[in-house]
Image 1 (cartoon, protein in one colour):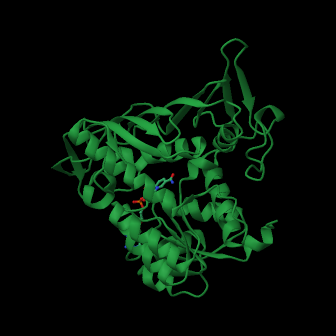
Image 2 (image 1 turned 180 degrees about the horizontal axis):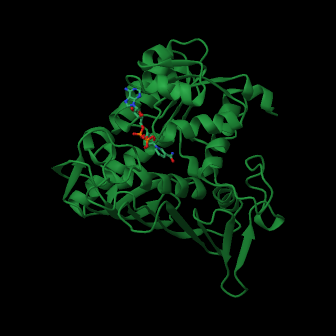
Length: 382
Ligand SMILES: NC(=O)c1ccc[n+]([C@@H]2O[C@H](COP(=O)([O-])OP(=O)(O)OC[C@H]3O[C@@H](n4cnc5c(N)ncnc54)[C@H](O)[C@@H]3O)[C@@H](O)[C@H]2O)c1
C-alpha cells in the first residue's frame, strides 16, 4: 500500500510557467510533493519562482534536468518542445509527466516510447480527464459489464476561447502546436477518456475538419493562453491552417462505434466535455460542467442520477476522491489525482490508470489518421 510519505519523498521540477505549469505546481503541493525547481525562458522562470516560492529557477531546461534535487520532470511547454524535453529528461534519469498531446507526430512519439522502454522510468502523459471520479467509475462499470456490451459512444468537447478572429495563441500555428489544433488539443482528451472507459483503442476514423476563420488577426507581441483581446492592441493578419472545429466518426477495437464533435469556436461553451456511453443493458452520461453527477439511462425503469461519493455512485474512484459528496471535485482535482496515481507508480504501486507514453503515442496516431481521413474523405485505419 502506497502511503502519502512515500510519494512525498519525491521532488518535482516543472518546465513551462504559462497557464498549466502553475496548475501542476498547485496540484503537487496539495499532495505534499515538494516542487524544487522551475524553468521558463529568459526571466519568466525567475519570476514564476518568486511568485510560487520555488527554490531554484532556470532559463535553460537542461540545467533543471541536471539538478539532483529533481526526481520527476513535468513538461508544460508548447507541444513542439515535448519530444526534445521528454527524451532529454529520460536520458538524464528522470521520471516524466508530459503534457498532451505527447508530441508533434508519431515519429517523435515512437522515439519516446522506445526510450521509456530502454530507460525503465515512469513516463505519463497528462490526460487528466481520466481522473474525474465519474470517468474512473465509468471505466469500472464498463469493465464489470454493468452497462452490457457497448454499442456506441457519443460526445463532444466544446470551448469558445478562440471564437473571435482576434483570439490568438501558439496553438493556432502548426509549427508550434502541430497540424491538428482543436482535435489534438482537446479532442484527444475526449478520445483518450473514451478509450480508457471502453478499455478499447480507436482503430479507424472518418473525419471532417473545418476552419471557420480562414484568416485571423494576430496581436503583435506574446499572448497568454486564454487572454482576451484589448482595444489598444495592434494586429497582423495571417492565414489559418489548423482546425477550428471537427466531426469524427470512430470505430473501437471492441466493435463499439463513436461520434465526436470538437470545437474551439462554440460561443458560451467554456470547457465542456460530454460523454454518453450506450450499452446493451443501460446507458450512462456525464458532462464535465456538472462533474459531480453521473446519469444512468434505462429503457423501462426510471433514469437515475448518482451523486459523487455516495453508495449509488459506486466505488470505482475510491482513493482518487478526497471530499465528501456535494463538495465539488473538478478540473484542478483531476491533476492532483492523476499525479497521485503517477507518483504512486514511481514509488512502486502502479494501478494502471494513468495515460502512458504508449497511450500518448496512440492519440497522436489517431490524429494522423484523422488528417488522412479528412484529406481522402474516407474511413482510415489508425
Ligand atoms: N491537461 C490539460 O488540461 C491542459 C490544459 C492546458 C494546456 N495543456 C498543455 O500544456 C502545454 C502548455 O500549454 P499552456 O496553455 O500552459 O501554454 P502557455 O503558452 O500558457 O505556457 C507555456 C509556457 O512554456 C514556456 N516555454 C516555451 N518554450 C520554453 C522553453 N524552451 N523552455 C522553457 N519554457 C518554455 C512559455 O514561455 C510559457 O510560459 C501544452 O502542451 C498544452 O496542450 C494541457
